[in-house]
Length: 149
Image (tube, rainbow, N blue to C red):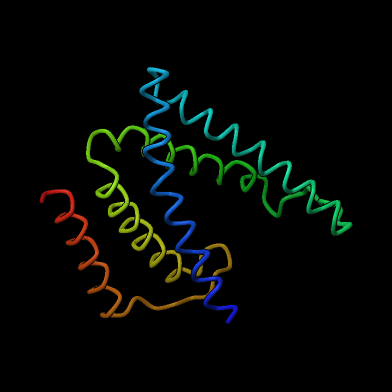
């Protein structure tokens, strides 16, 4: 049962990504500056996550250890997220939300396959099988069909 709930949470998170992109694009139109919209989105997200982290830490009596296993981890996630949000803001008005989501999923799949293959950052190593390659090609073909048709 827990597996179903985690899967549904993943679907909900994906739906939120699809909704976030046009919300941020509309904010960019209103501000007249896509990078400012991305910055505001990140700022609000950081404030909300900071408040939640403090509440959870206090409720669980956990002390946060701010020493990261590698200093670059403090910066890397934010930089990757900033690129994603800014790209989404720029692409939604140009290619549409559905095409953007299709290309995002395709990019996530391709990067995920490489991360899995290399065992990057401690993830379990999974080989790139013919089935995975065919699945990735089908996903890319579907993304192109969504964009073109």
